[in-house]
Image (cartoon, rainbow over all chains, first blue to last red):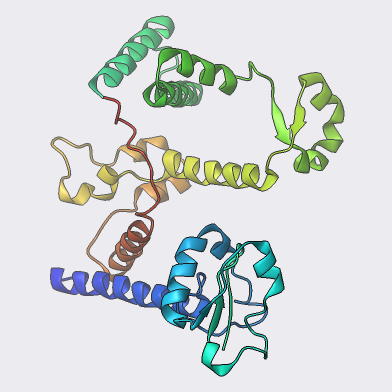
Length: 106
Length: 187
């Protein structure tokens, strides 16, 4: 086997695996970075997010760009529903970076 | 590194003096040699990683069972058939993760198999003279058919080896964020 051919196989393997890893990362979206839809039973639960709440909140703030930000302690977390219909259109999207990270609604 | 090699040379000399080569080449001699080398290396690693001699001796005491044996309570059911032996050995049950213990044991088994039986880099690359005066096929001396088969594994420029190398390169790259301290950092 010629060296060029060997490196083509090697490079092809690495590139294929990198593409698969990226596709898997976007599909599963473990930190809600991309806002990919969830599939019940497959990607609905994202337990890793609770270990990396700072990263998850930052990426979600950047992606959602909320008009209303609900900040506070657990009272705010329990008392306000960012997905509630009472929020006026001018206040949407609403983002609640709660302790357990995070809820939002438009 | 050189000091450790020197220690092992001394160990080899002592074993030779004690047994005078009477077990040389036998299965028992080979097994004893493997066990002695393995235990020596594991004990040596403790001194490499420990911050001082006292800490190393404390860890070695724990490893040898001086502080007793504790098993996660979640795995107690597995020892019910040998309850008498558990009591006799003074094994206690702790509130630690049972799945961590199982995972660690599985890793140890897999890695031990690789360490003991998989060909090393010199053997894999032996067709390309990886070192001066390298013996032809050293593991062929070990005999068993399956070990003989493993010893025939060697690197060649082929699509299979290219894919294997690519997979290892990928796994190595995505694992780069996991901190694993260099064993010899203290020296």
